Length: 317
Image (cartoon, rainbow, N blue to C red):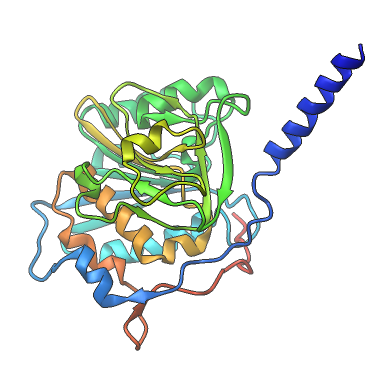
């Protein structure tokens, strides 16, 4: 009996440690970097044009955290005007879920929200949009739906979804944990082997066939020389930081990162999202590259922000 009590106690302590979710990590954005360094990654976009008119639908929802975290509406208000500056791009907005008409008109759905409990009819609209060739970019908590029994349907639309607290995991991570990129994938070709962020991610997600993990967070002990394949095999890897998925004719680019508002003001993070957008649309990323600098380049030629933005007051909706 004493042994059983001891085992139960040890298990309880382990659960408390796991539930802590790295609360000791202080939100801190990356230091701004020289524009010239970013230009080496974006390349020259002068005279770059899209091959067609692109209709983007941005899906947002009510903000559900304190300021600076899950600022769904604030990020929508940041990106929608930026996207509209790209020639041949039009942007519509939806709140919580698009209408059939909006799905019918969109080429790309970008979702950043906590999805409501979708009906079977809504899932049918979503899946139909993807399978007939619609593109999707899914950011952070957009891979979570409750009740968890609906997770499989969501994964059918975007490739991965939260599989419940007993299976899937989440945690904040610091700059000490490199975020490795699969640079063999076209979305990340030519980019650094890894970047560093201070954000949050989920892993051990419910994963459908045709999913390719292209971003994973290593441990503090990860070495710069570690290959992406070996990162995915490592014991403490946090998979599903970024992934791609195909269903029918549709292409999906997903990430579980994007918890903090300041992350969206990081030029490298923007670069990853913009590369993902271009990949889903089967377009050259060059026309999207000006947005990596938009509104975050100062008069000293530095790109980024030092503002944690944690004092933001959520809007009521």
